[in-house]
Length: 280
Image (tube, rainbow, N blue to C red; front, side, top):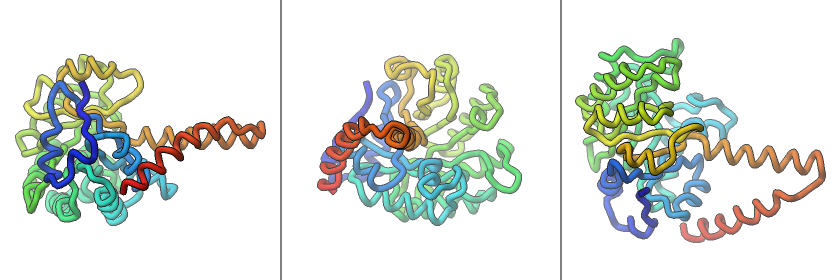
């Protein structure tokens, strides 16, 4: 059964503590990924208990590819999303914008300062020569991030093993990395790109921290993911891509056929937006 709360359930609570408590293996937290304040308000109004930013979705709002938005814009965006809703917000902080552990720690410290309840850090460098970090350096980066995550009010640190979406679908290495990140202080573990239920079960049974999975085509249904012990499910940039897909269909329908069937979908969206934007 998925974990869901209304925004009012969170009023006056410590967002970080609430976010941490929502991670229950076997009762997956459905954590969608808004790309701006408007989509965040809509998702919060629909009753999701926590939200997470999406690097690809946010970059796309400026016509950029994933990873091109940069640290300053991404952190400002994350702060704005956290400020506009009454549920915990975690941020996709990519690789922390630095290979050096100290740079990653500074990024996480800033995430704490701007009021985020959580953040994720990847073990993949998007620099001049993109590569998956050597496990030794990757662990040092998680250690530095975990230490910074305890500053002030603190936040929930998610460590990501990027193998399966970076051309290296090595389950053994992925599990070894997640186990090492757990020992380095990560509170949640995440290997985006896992599809097979057996692989997901292997990851969950190999670690002692909550595991996040990314919803992708071909994945097992929610009930089976819950049975496997998954604690959190996110959608990455898929909601934004779906919204863009609806835009493309509507535009083609109007341009090619002069039809307006999409106006019914627009009516549904407008009704929810009216409610969401009045509440905040």
